[in-house]
Amino acid sequence: MCGIIGYIGDKNASPILVNGLKKLEYRGYDSSGIGIVSLSDGKLALRKAHGKIANLEKLIKSHPVPAGTVGISHTRWATHGAPNRVNAHPHADSSGKILIVHNGIIENYETLKNALKKKGHKFLSDTDTEVIAHLIESHYKGDLFLAVKKAIKELDGAFALGVICSDHPETLIAARVGSPLIIGLGKNENFIASDVPAILEHTRKIIYLKDGQIASIRKDKVSIFNFSGKSVIPKIDKVTFKVDSVAKQGYAHFMLKEVHEQADVLKQMFQRRLKGDSVVLEGLGLTDKQLKAVNNIIIVACGTAYHAGMVGRYIIEHLSSVPVSVDVSSEFRYRNPIVSKQTLVLAVSQSGETADTLAAVREAKAKGAKIISICNVVGSSLARESDGILYTHAGPEIGVASTKAYTAQLGMLYLLAIKLGFVHKRLAKTAIHKIIKDLKHIPALYNKILKNKSAIAAIAKKNSHFGCFLFLGRNINFPTALEGALKLKEISYIPAEGYAAGEMKHGPIALIDEYRAVVCIATESDTYEKMISNMQEIKSRKGKIIAIATEGDKTIAHHATHVVYVPKTNKLLTPFLAVLPLQLIAYFIAVKRGCDVDQPRNLAKSVTVE
Ligand code: BG6
Image 1 (cartoon, helix red, strand yellow):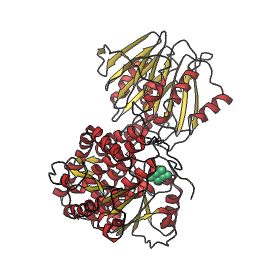
Image 2 (cartoon, rainbow, N blue to C red):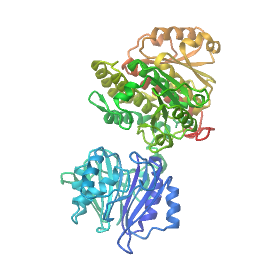
Image 3 (tube, helix red, strand yellow):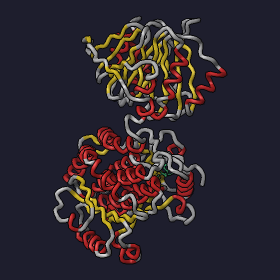
């Protein structure tokens, strides 16, 4: 997810572009750039910087952008090519006349790049995007619109594009498939942007470009066509909401927005990584033969990622019989871990910058282990120090309490488990087919749970007065209980503990009385009956129980004060569903208590020191 903005009009473009870009920084902030057609020499002028947009502003201060009335700008969330100045957008063609910004992923960029290289094109960056600029150039015979139209027909993947050309300072071209793009209508000026906040200070008249549409934009005219060239009369919307709310897309907090993005993140991951009944793990960096040689796995991670790792252990051992151990990174590095050449160390991290996990990886590497990382930030330190990298592509996660990155980590761990089960010949084709079918169904089930959000909010508010919570789960949902407790601790500051339910009688049951709330994950499972008896032990000691149960469970309500139902699914996949109500319960309790949900006290999105 990146942020794009474009301008064409009578005003000087660069300040408009930079101000608008800042309102899109939540979409990506690892590098940025701006490009305009200079009024003075009619040439393209380009400024690009690594890191936050503030760095671009600093650069422009020392190297001012010449005046120009047409321009495009971009803030990046790297997917292909590390975040640095060269890979930042805009990207030019080899003539230096055509400039583009892009949000999305071009799946067939390598094929296109090789074909263009054969025609003599030279590439400066590692991005998929630069290929588009050269592709447009290869079709350009003086008509920019036609060249873009021809080029986009060869693209496979998602794209929102902004294109300018120094030969045509009167034109800005925009096109989209998959990634969002809007056109803002002004007086003698028009805009393109990834999202409304970028241009709201200039206009509230918006056209939402649809998939498969391309627009030729002049300062006083916008013409829209579908990709086959048919003209389209667009619907013009009038937007009414406040700037801030839009960055959160109408959600009160980034955390709530990110909770709602989980279905899409998993859907895109499964679309990209599942081809029929085959798991395609681009970036893994290990052949099936090398994977088959792996005889033990150590997962290292911190915080929420550690809980994902714990679920990963259950599913990898269950599907592949490869033994797995899970370590908090800060412990791993000091316990003199036993690691051999057949050991695969799996590092899980949203940011890829967590110092403890980096140190654990360096320790394992020094002992000869192969390092595969599951990470959300492209080009992060962890990605650079790993032998293989599986990007979760969950987009920027702004809320400090991790949500969508967690379920994306689960998604990747399940895919890896299936792959290992396949190469270790532990999984029959029918079993692979079944679990893949059930996995693909998970995103739709998320939307079902979210429809029930207000009931979950009511339960949360009713229990927000409790001063201490216990979260209980068994087997593959024991880590889910740990994650539920962590979410509540992180954002509401209420003491909460996650426990394996079977451990209750060995200590924590001493805590149970009418002043305790206990969240029990009692979805359909082989340990369901055991979970029910734990709930009876709690109820008999007046503990207040919030149960997470499977739809259609007619008996659970007898054992609990409140029940949140999640849809029925494959027992192995319940961690995906059971965590969603836990994220929401923590969220609504924190909101009820007036906590700063997105930036809770004492926490950071990524701890880069030991
Ligand atoms: C903490 C974050 O700082 O680090 C948590 O607040 C996160 O949300 C943990 O789970 C680990 O971070 P990462 O980036 O390595 O997954």
